[in-house]
Length: 59
Image (cartoon, rainbow, N blue to C red; front, side, top):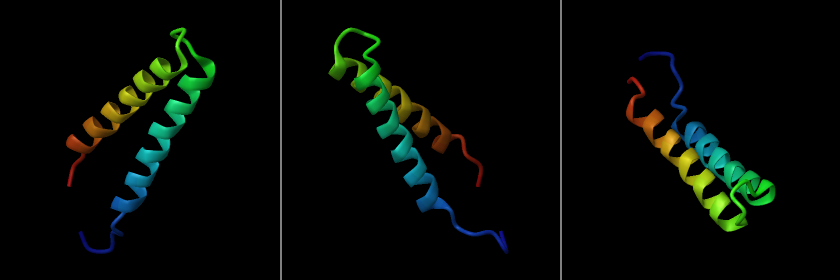
């Protein structure tokens, strides 16, 4: 569309930051008893939600 900026890079950067943040939170809060397992699961959930958002995005 005319007049709209391409924000693909910004969206990818925000997605990467949210996945990294989820991994850090999982590692330090350790809700599952194993820091690496918690970081991996929370990071995977964040990555999956980012991928699904990209699939269903319009335009």
